[in-house]
Image (cartoon, rainbow, N blue to C red; front, top):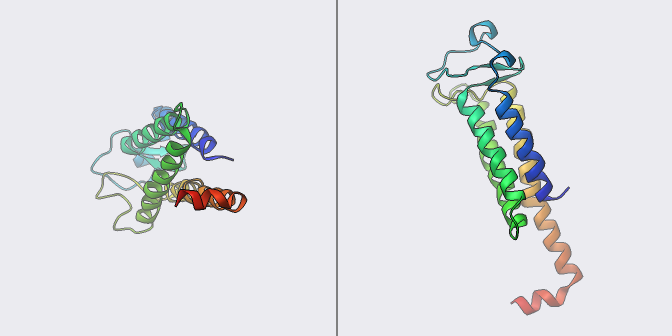
Length: 156
């Protein structure tokens, strides 16, 4: 898979997941699910009985989804934009996954639920972002310089 494909497919998944999560029938209420109280309980619940989410989670997914789709569809700069998108996914989702591991930070001061299955989902997206944002471009650059060593000397 290519960074452009990751940006597009990951963006579509995030956009759909974030938009569908706004459907109240697909979420269990916080009281029924035994979720901790938050300072921001707008659209709060257990989405698909798995993911604790409130309006901030859902809006962030929609924004990330639109950013991924947009970066993959840029006419002339879609590869660098897709790589940058992947790096942002790695950074933001990685931080969210780590914060979700600690009880002191797993609700971001009561405004953003980052616990439970959210930790695993953030970790998966962070790992994919790291691969498509850092590992794959570095591997491609190394392969290009090994195939065309004269290009390296001319550039310097």
